[in-house]
Image (cartoon, rainbow, N blue to C red; front, side, top):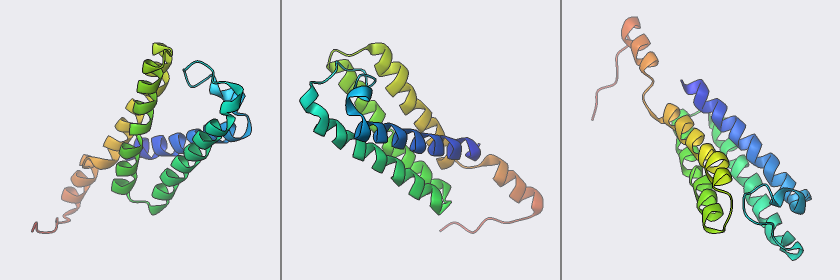
Amino acid sequence: MRKFGYAVAGVVSLGIMWIGARYLMEPEAIAGTFGVPSPPRDADPFLRVKGIRDVTSGLVVLALLATRQPRMVGIGLLAEAVIPVGDAVIVLTSGGSPATAFGVHGATAAVMVAGAATLLLPDRRGATRAVRSGATRPASA
């Protein structure tokens, strides 16, 4: 199950970095995909701010993946799942499409939470292997 969590973390980080890069390079073209009415042309600097934050969010998850510590990746993924939840709320409260709010942002948050859960919950298969191999668990404090 941890492979699923790692895959989610990798796909989400690369995906949000790609989206962020588009906000940096062509903010007007991608702004309409967020789910809220298109911003005025003079909003480009604010859209670019979103872009750099998206790229950075992806880099944080990649850095956590580099630690090869499932708990760290899971905590980071869970914390960053707040972002698409916030995005969904913004879409819903700004007259945007509920389909985009739930189908894009809500679904992203749900997948991120599911991926985080596989990294944070005990790996039953690993525990079973340890018991079969005769490995012992450290004494609890």
